[in-house]
Length: 507
Image (cartoon, rainbow, N blue to C red; front, side):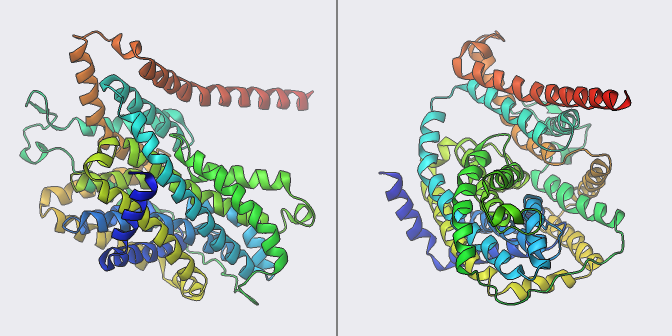
């Protein structure tokens, strides 16, 4: 069967009333958390992991994907009306969108963001559907050493992509890898790092760690940094709809942003943040009058392109997640934990063993995209009212929900203690600038990387050079070294230029 036939089958399954309900819940929650500053889709999916423990796997995963897409949509609302991005990928939208709102053109800014997100999400989801089977065919020829090299690349790029320091990213990763060693060794049956505590023999629950680090840690960090100031929400004046000139100036940036965002989102070191910044700089360089003069003062191209790029990147991140089991964003890492919660391992074998779930998930993204377009423009007034929720209430509710969810999934005082310990650890890591996502990625992928390494060494009878004797693994390990060293070289060059310029100014 072709990809088109599988997609049509998935679309038929996704039209099931229960799956439609899950998709609607997902996109509605996603839009809400995208609108609220400081709460992202990763935090929301982490909170829902313990709640969905006993639910239908397909419905839960569709809901998680809907939250991801909705978070990208909703983030533009606060960027434009409040100049405070609800989601990190919407930072660029605030540059031009808020200035448009201050000039009384908040309606067209919101409209081009919503329609651009729809266009990009639609095209990118179709690209996902037709590209994923080809990646799966390539991945099926991977051996143990190739998989290990691929995971090393994922470890390095995730560590380098999150946070401002590669060293801090790697430190966070090794914390996650150390936590992954706790429990019974799957090969020898020996207890490792359990220190005689029976509750640790099964290892650290990914769900507990994710909820603690993303939800509890974030709530504590926001409470610790609360400035007590209220931001002004700019009212939407006039028509929400776009005029003919707005359409003419927006449709090319929508398409350009889509084809910038999707491949960047698909790359291990990519992400919506990079895609949206690149799209903005591209639109600024290619802008013609009157847009060229308006950049910096509220150019509609500066909203249309980045919004399309960050939604296309969101679909792009699902390519390595579904085909290789590799998360490239924090939300993708939590979604990977969601798959594993239901005993599913994303990767090439998932397309063979559970094609119905995969294709209904991909098809439901098309439906969710349409739902988001319908939800965003008519209900803009409702989303803006969410900004009036007092922050203390909001984060107290998150802490309560995280606690109840953890108790519901695993009614254990020890698990609740771990939630508190990891929550405090998440707060401390934020305080000192250490990224959170590599810890979760290390815990999820660490056991898989260890298993593949042991298999490769077992086949080669302990010969470590086998890792470099395959063309695929050697290439992936070389890319890992480049991904690790290149940021350090670029930072050194940047510091050298800054020092030379400073020295020149002194002269």
